[in-house]
Image (cartoon, rainbow, N blue to C red; front, side):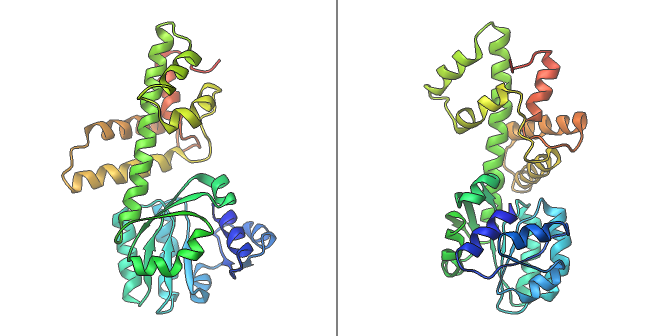
Length: 280
């Protein structure tokens, strides 16, 4: 995700200094016109705007433990990690103590959208701060302001929760259809023209029926995000029974397959338990 973002910002005329824990990224960054500094503290100390886009909360904590002490007062930190609002909020509070302004801007759309500038940017933080950086963020995709600090984090978790829920519900429905002797292409067409139509069916059903479990994101990362949103609901005393079942479906898949890549492996486990494959 970070690499295509880097390239788009360079192409838009911004000076980009990038770093990553993986040293092999240096050649790739230089290939899109960015400058390379491997240490997060050096990246942070040089930045007028620090953008972080990391796999999850643990990596964000590790990077910002080094970066925050190095940041200058007046810097803006924009975090694009899909992170727990609790963890992100604590890091932002530490950054603000140093005079750093913060926006949480987790993104949706994946690497292809990052390359084409078609990401969804879910923004939490002061509107005036967003407006100051909106021209830069517009280079990356469609900006939606959700509210104050933390609103971007929560929105991204809810978007992913609904997507994961659609995946599990679709898997169960199609397995029942197959057992009932209904052609899956026929039922997919019927559902697409009904009130049950959704983006998951339009964009991902064909992949699922080909046996593609979307290995662009780790199963452990899916569970991390679902755990964060279920924990938030518990903290805020919101009934969350159905969403908790979605989390448990993904947790069972993680127990079965381990921390491998595959956003739809919860459906693979349903297939395994049913003794029936959707594909083919």
